[in-house]
Length: 97
Length: 387
Image (tube, rainbow over all chains, first blue to last red; front, side, top):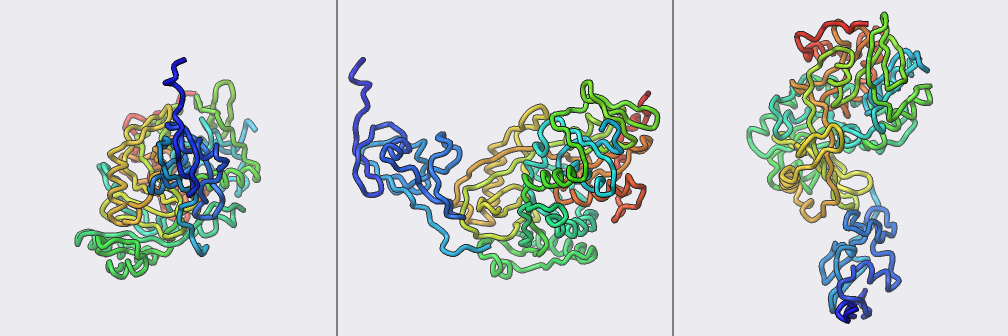
């Protein structure tokens, strides 16, 4: 096996805390490896949401990546210095309707 | 039950409604469905309750709907929908938040005033608002909106809930529903019809063909040639957001409907054509239609531009060549009824009640003689089936 196939360890920041992840792994995998499953809340009823389909379809795993909200963590690849923030969705303040 | 009073072919919203209304009157009913109930047009439609007069053309539609003609039926439908959850004992996410039909040009504003007059005559309360008045009620509307008609009775019901609710209520009244039971033959036996699915059969004096895009094929099994023009249309849905809009928003000049459903998603449609109608499988969405529909919706409701598209899907619409609904007994074929065509979701309770009354030999609550299937028969198509 060539040493080139070993993943490269990089530094990412998850909710302000620096940690290590592998370059190229999915952001979802990096979050789950760090023990973080709930990524956001349902904006209507406040229920916790996290990775569900794992393939970019359900949009339940959206987080803010490098300042860009609404990024699907399952289809985004980790890069060195990436800033990942969970629970960045605006929540309704008063239930109505 | 192999000898029911009525065999209903198709477990979409019309079949479910017809079965329920017939069972309420004591008829013994069997419903035959080629696949899963509610899986085709009834389950893929927008779920709008159109009580104010409708826009007359989908994008690409050749013949306009005679919108004024439908208004008495829409008024009747409004009354039915008001009672439907109580009558079926089910929550179908019925919302009657009212609806705007917007105009961007002077000609379109004139159309709003013309239809307002039809609505007044039909007893449907509507109001024509200036753009500013409309924006005062719904600030999400853009400056492009020059005028809008408002109807407090417009609304929404969840298409994934209403047909199952009808079927559940029908089953409680003794109706048998056979899913994955495609009809393969219809034979005349004396005054009855013998409806076959493979080696199974049901014999009844009355058949109700509510097979949606398959109305032509099912009728042909009985030797009846009915012309239909089924198409596939598509819908789009955004991610969920907190409740921001409680109204249905439509456009008088173009096919467009936008509303926020209970789950928080914005549903965007308007009858834009899908890439292809696939009668054997699932129809394919069209990217140009997606782009056109979303651009148009974003022009009227700019906040949509900040949302992400979650999904889109296509489903059949059982349109007729003249774009008007079809309902009634086939001339020359006593006991063979057909119902379908456009706006079947809104009109489903009316069509179920109308079919039940016609089968009972009563006059319908509203006259529908002009909507009978006779106009869609091929000239050489009235020969009875040989026994």
